[in-house]
Amino acid sequence: MTILATEGLTKRFPRVTALDRLTVTAGAGVTGLVGANGAGKSTLIKILLGLLPPTEGSATVLGLSPATQALEIRRSVGYMPEHDCLPPDVSATEFTVHMAQMSGLPRSAARERAADTLRHVGLYEERYRPIGGYSTGMRQRVKLAQALVHDPRLVFLDEPTNGLDPQGRDEMLALIRRIGAEFGISVVVTSHLLGELERVCDHVIVIDGGRLLRSSAIGEFTQATRSITVEVEEGLEALAERLTSLGQSVTAHGRLLSVDAGAPATFDVVRDAVVDLGLSLVRLEQGRHRIEDVFREESASV
Ligand SMILES: Nc1ncnc2c1ncn2[C@@H]1O[C@H](COP(=O)(O)OP(=O)(O)OP(=O)(O)O)[C@@H](O)[C@H]1O
Image (cartoon, rainbow, N blue to C red; front, top):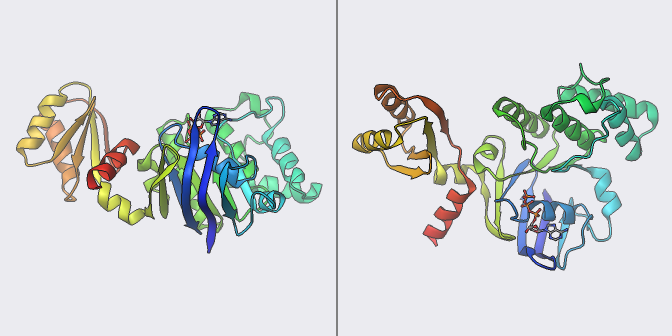
């Protein structure tokens, strides 16, 4: 089943072309939409929702046209925007019930759905507190709840991990996986980090400067870009030398080292080298790729 398709989709603003003849399709499941800041991700979502008209080209969402069937699309699609303007003086329950009613549910059904949805996103205990006192992570969950409350077939999540600490990010990613796997709702989720989407997506679309760079199943991405990122407080050069002498392929990116992880043992080799050299480890992560790395690989392989 195709959940979205674009054909030559172009959006020109007076000073910038945000989308440039984008032709892409995505099927059911969790799709990651990846691109650096300004790549055109939010513009694409807004066009798909019928909130912005394209300059040229066409698109469909769940087989519907955003140009002529935006209301039908909003009935079946949820949207978690990147920025929020949540009212500070109402509770998550009041807000989510209100959003459910806005999408056509009667009050009693809206209350029931809001309670269920808030429980699913992990906001049940705090649901009667005013949103003004919520942390960033809780606000993100309110935004997610309002996107899910009308039981959509598809949700667009625009940068849902923005502003979250590592634990909050992990929790949000786990929730996204559950939305796709347990509730059977298709998800399109944006991020500027391929590494975090790798963990939850079935398919990834990469855009750069409004153009399609790549669209593939996640397996093809991870094979092509598998690496380990390591950051130490001091002694990065010594670590790079040690790893190179151990036969590892190492690239420095400022304060970070990226190590090709061809073999499963590479992770242990890096950890042992850090310990042997007595370095203080800040970060050691598998499979976190900056989007720029994918761009480099793509242009190198052209
Ligand atoms: N309403 C607008 N008027 C003029 N330019 C705009 C408008 N909306 C977006 N743009 C420009 O279009 C380009 C793409 O923006 P968009 O918000 O779609 O990118 P993005 O990939 O979502 O990045 P970010 O994560 O930073 O929001 C940017 O150069 C942005 O400045």
